[in-house]
Length: 437
Image (cartoon, rainbow, N blue to C red):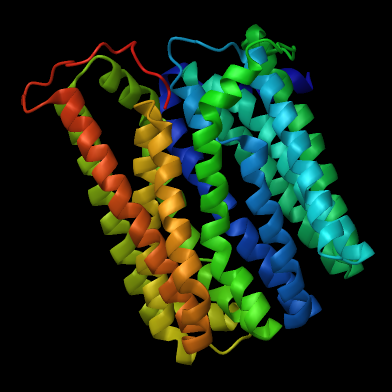
């Protein structure tokens, strides 16, 4: 009976799929965006700024290592319309990358000399990402099959329940150890429960191992993974430098200012992810006008979202953050506005990276992030030493600005080569002749 109830809940009515996809994708994106902000709020209010600063670093490390777990294959899997790789291949590859992620987390804790409580919390937070990444394989296959609404709802339920469990456990125990354990256990139970109706609807999703194609799949996805890993590191690079160069309280202030920045990228993803299959089809058939129209519209929407959020942030948003987190932000109002504007730059660059994945030119993604890494190496530490928290914001903008410029050139050149100057489109290449690099 429970299985039938979950099936009706996740899949609903066939005629409402498109509307449900956008609605639940919005909900899941907002929950994903607000989760870290909610955790920081609860830990800051109950445990204090010093405890929150330590938790932010552990949470950030787990988030960064998540790039290893996902290998950033979701868009690749969804856009694999010719099914070059089977579901068991994606599933087997994900288990391998998730185990590598857990090993990396343990290695970080040992090398950094993290105390026993922090080490346990780090493993729980990384374990939470492991469950999330295994779920992602199923969701990618179901999205490609046309039921993005079902997986968005499942993701919303899982994030909502596990987040509430973390907050309740921390409020009762005042222990990050118990709260992180509650987060992991509740996430695992939700995934096991919500996976059942997906497997029943799509029998091909039943777990299985397929080792032979995995090396090729991981190699095809390596530039995307390396790019995502560098992205996860680079968006948090100012935090790491602040942690090394300034008191822990500065980490908390920057964490509060930086938290809303992710909302722009997540809202951008909310708009384009339901259209990813259609975008891939337009690229594969050489429909230049449709592809250009979709890309142009998305970039205009990113600019509009960024402007609206930045305006709200510098007028009322910073006061709301002050009230929520109990920290003084008046002197950082201009810095907050800059960070929000740079959030739009990040969202645009991330979307262009998705286009490069659809184009099967993943090597450009890695090249762009290597350029951004060079900017970080030369700019972040000097800017923080000179300007403190404001310098960290400027460094973030320089890093993401370099990435956006490179990605814009790469996508523009690729589109010109594919579609040429014809207004009517036309495939000027053999669509099957892609090396993946």
